Image 1 (cartoon, rainbow, N blue to C red):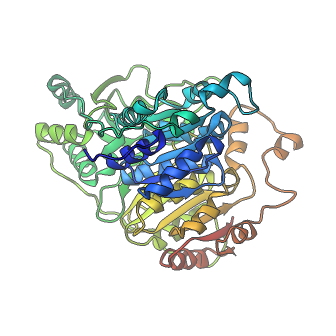
Image 2 (cartoon, rainbow, N blue to C red):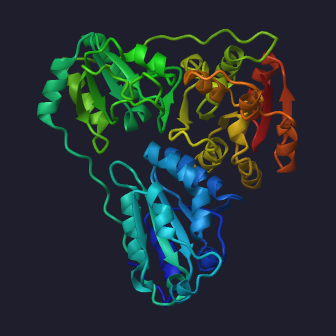
Image 3 (cartoon, one colour):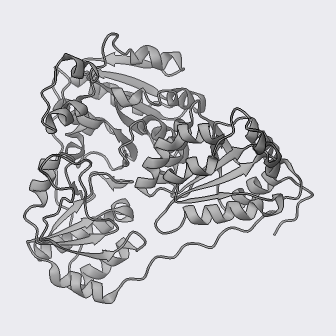
Amino acid sequence: MTEYPTMNGAESVVRSLHGAGVSVCFANPGTSEMQFVDALDRTGLMRCVLGLFEGVVTGAADGYARMAGVPAVTLLHLAPGLSNASANMHNARKARSPMLNLVGDHAVRHRGFDAPLTSDVAGAAAPFSDWVKTATSPDTFARDAMEALGAAMARPNRVATLIAPADIGWDEGGVVAPPPPPPDFAPLDEHALERAAGMLDAETVLLVGGRVLEQPDAVALLHGIADKTGARVLAPTSNRRCDRGAGRAGIDKVPYPIDMALETLAPFKRAVLIETVPPVAFFAYPGKPSLLLPESCEVMTLAGLDGDGPAAIAALAERVRASKLIAPVELPPSPAAGAITPATIAAAIAHALPDNAIVVDESISGGRDIWRATRAAAPHAWISLTGGAIGDGIPMALGAAVACPDRPVVSLQADGSAMYTIQALWSQAREQANVTTVIFANRTYEILKKELFAVGANPGRSALDMLDLDRPHLDFVSLARGMGVPARRIEDAAELQRAIADAAHEPGPYLIEAMM
């Protein structure tokens, strides 16, 4: 290991993280993190990306991890800053994205005086983290950071939060620590493999998620298994990442609306799970179940969340003598001139996507047709909102662009949820991230209107006022330009297709407000 002269705790952490392959820091630092700002500057070992709100920082780290396969580090300020970041920590946790949060705290000697920002940092971290620890000494600080990195990279990936009292960072005595060992997959159970092979027929569903969806060959093998046995293949409603498009096997998802989900899964008497868990309704509804598979359905796990799903599929395909299958699909017709609707916006995006794009989907209700319409679009990666905490899309697009600067990012964004983390546009401009943001401007929380009716309500004016985005209307073109992002408003579907295609081929960020 390289020997360094005397260093403080913060520098030892930065050097250790860099040595373990962490190369990006998304940050919104405060006074308690100035020693890390200094260490990052002096060492020059990481790219530092500033977010103007902590939810931008963790959302960007989520998008980065989904595309890079390794975590960035986030730098956050005390419990209030961590709390601002928590919604997108929640989304990352539900996506099982690796995330490493470094959160500053008051110096140990200062904690007892109840300063204005004194609060329970560990308590704030716990609901949104899988692993939490507070550093106690400069000489063990880097070792704690490597333990945190190991927790984030475990199988399945996790959200790890390391709390850094200010004096532990600025005091000398830091020692560089070696990287954590690489994680292992849980071994494949031969008895489970035999049982799964025996369950496959027309009344069986293969539910698959996780790493499987990131490997098109594994999905193609699944379709070969289904073709051989009569089983059906489905993915969960929300997923960390799916690599798809022309020349790759597509996959249907369990629908979001509960009635459609129950109808989709009703025929199945058996379910084989691979890197996923039994599907659950997003919410409870009067007179409807929480678990979406039929109550009598026999459920077994071939590969758990800690398993190697692609390897399990390869073994299952060998057992039933199946080979890869990619069914031919066609693009929908290009949209004609006319109104922008869910159907025409889906067709426009399907034709406009450039090769090797990254699609970031937080389109909510306005994007309901896009997944199916883009099955034959140019090959692309698809990452989407997972935990249901809206406000992930624009920051995730920033993180994905930082992870893959050579790939165009197309961000499909509902207007209401865009306002949660609109500050991410400023970071996109500052980093010159190659992101085309398409705002689905229906000027309402349309999905909440559907939910209101789903619980049996008969809404009046006061209820609808809480769900409409009017008085005044949002002006995303002005908002974007005010943060350094060129923008335009479009009301025609054919023009929308041309605008997306043109923007995606130009460097730097661009925003299109699509009036629906």
